[in-house]
Image (cartoon, rainbow, N blue to C red):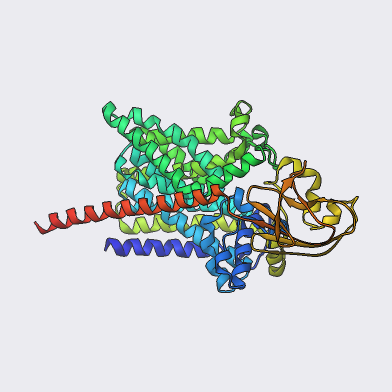
Amino acid sequence: MNKHKSFVIFIIFFVLSLLMIIPYWNFPYIVNDLPYHLAPLNEANYFIQKHQWFNIFSSISTKTMGEFGYPENLFYPSFTYYPVLIFRIIHLSAFRTYLLSLIVINFLAFCSMYIVTKKLTNSKKAALFSSIVYGFSQYKLNDMYVFQNVAESIAFILVPICFYGLYQIICFDYKKWWILSIGLSLLILTHVLSVVVLSVFMLLSLGMLFIKKSSWQVKLKRIFWLIVAGIVSLLLSVIFLGPLIQNYLSINGNLLMGKSILFTNAVNINNVIGASVGLIEVVIIIMALVYFKYLLTFYRYILVEIFISILLITNLFPWGLLQSIMYPIQFPVRFLAITNFLVALIGGKCLLILFSRVSYNNKSKYSLFFGGLVILELCIFTAQAEMNRRNLPKISVDEFNLRSSQISYYDYLPKNAEPIINKLDKHSIPLMNKASNIKQSGYSTSYNAIHYKINNGSRIKYINLPNEYYPGFHAYVNNKEVPIKSNKNNAINIPIQKGRNDIDIMYKSTITQIISFWISIISWIILISFISYKKFINFRIKHKKSNK
């Protein structure tokens, strides 16, 4: 019976996820960074269509993002988004693939919150309430449908898992430390900025260790396993972190994107309710205050964290003092991702208290309550979708497919490349070397490679290419490798011969990438083997007890 109820709940989540894309099914639009998030899929899809299956994971973009070798996958992880490629393999357009990915993301976000809340409260009713509140949270919907931030949308699936793993270590069963390792590593491989935001509240949550009554030996054990979980998560995700650090250091950390002013980007205190924190979330916070004396210390602590998270998104917080440390998060409003989870979680607990105090035991009343909640959330969502449709520029599906591949971005280029960024996607060697007598007869790209054909009619021995240098680039002239350097704009500089020059610029995995790859693969194998062994031992113990 319990399994049947869970199955029905998951069906509800799937149906809700379907309903949440209907307003946008025939409304293609592109704003903000969506092309950036779709580019790795479009790049991989190009090679899939060519049946080049081993070329799916590229380090640089040679078929998208201006086709000049933009280092997208070196600076921004896309690992958890690649499964969506299954939709491209069956020849769906970029637009339909994007919409179907939203169904998957919404469904998994509902499920993630439901499972975590159910384990913490041991109540399906509380879990269902929390998952609906979380799935329809205003910041999440804005992130997915207005800002079209795919990576941060995926992070909503992983945030509950990370917090559940953290709570297990510092409050409950620290032997389940590996849950935090898996959640945190997947978050790193999805959206690094969400990791920065999450880390702030992981540090704040450590206060629960000292509020909870336990011996210092137990507290030290919990701290030890928290450190172990952190180290393991780094080992699992070093496949991305290793190359990221290498390339970041190669340009001395000076990225073209610049540093956002956090105080300027913070939310005005007058716009917090409604514009940032949804009305249902406000009602839950009021409920938590009303039932404060009935809440366990664990949930009281969470309520305090909710108020801190809301303070952090506003300009009341002295962001100027932390500008030099926290500028990577760009927008303080990102802390709402944490607020949404904490409010939804405490909302489930408050619902249980409410039901217990008003004798809300009739099944029909439960059904009426949850039915009304779903209808209310869908109405709010539909109204917001209609407002978006009025404000967002509609384009054709064909234009969506084209723009999702061809738009150029420069954020992760080095700062000193700024004077030449307009030359990069023109792919012109003569333009990069105006004083020379060079004629270009060809330009093409392939997997992790860029090819030029030029004729050098002068005595010039070195030329600059319209490509930025990063560790891993190799240059070949007439099939012979030549030394590769970078000029003051970090553009690739190579020697050439007089006459015809067939130039091939290829990106090959660095030693750092190779070592990082194997560290992560081996770490995942060891961790999965460890978890499987623990599960097997526990199964045998339960089996023996049941036979006695």
